[in-house]
Length: 179
Image (cartoon, rainbow, N blue to C red; front, side, top):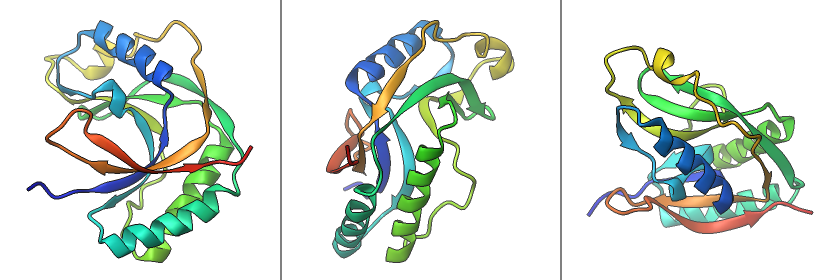
């Protein structure tokens, strides 16, 4: 049996997932792995493996924190990469997203999770492991979604990974932001 991992993320509305999936399919770029559109999300905190007790405590903490945040909107920006490993779509800077991530992150740390210390870079991963002959930037970054895509952030979701299935990420608990 594969070990389960967990993470907390902003969910992406289905219509936005579909539009991003259509865009990604049009790129026809040589990546080893393309993310299944139903798995698109913006990670706030990657927890890794967790006990039932840890999940219960982090769920309680996150539920209380998320209620303090009001719903807000995000707008997609441009394609980016983390080296030649990951192709991702960014979002325009939105301070409310950064505050939400900080609060969720701190709630997880209080439970004892050892979290990534790198600065938060909100993104939606589209593909992994570039296999092209030239630079990823030269081939892809001139491509852009031609329309403005905005969407409402209404919830944070605790996901469980299932690496042997599609979609890979199963929502376990949804935490709604306030109106």
